[in-house]
Image 1 (cartoon, rainbow, N blue to C red):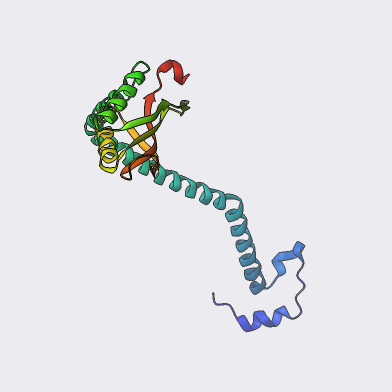
Image 2: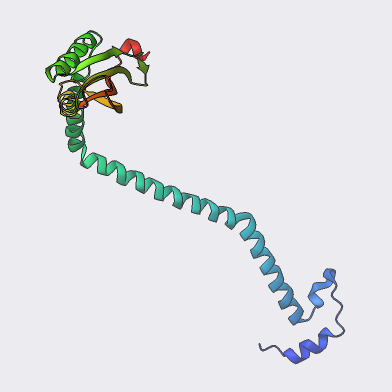
Length: 206
């Protein structure tokens, strides 16, 4: 049945909107009131029910993405587990090989002898060759050695090269070259600190 909108609008001019007698309201007012109630009800449902569910849904989607990423990482590890194991064995072998190049507690004196031999073999004179206090690090102990050697330029250069070729890991730091004023002009004084490293044993790491 079609609604006569003009007649309905005419009735609105003198209508008395009594909430206790809603049945007497014009049809247009009833429709507008019904729409307002529907919109308000929809808002309440969305605010108290749907919005929380949407938040939960978004959280679940985010969690799903994280789980997918974790799965992809774990899947990649699982697929390449044999390769990782082989790499781990290789790293362990390299680590053990490097440890063998570090002097033990009982080999530091022999290392000093090696340094002396390398220097004298190259014609150097040592005015100082002595250990300095140990420097404790997290996983290793640094063993510094202060060296003062006198010789010609090429002799000092060969000494540095031969030290680098020793079986133990030795690094040279804080080079200082000075002319030896008390000797011939081609004589130089080299002050340098040599450092070797010792891996801490289980007792020292505690």
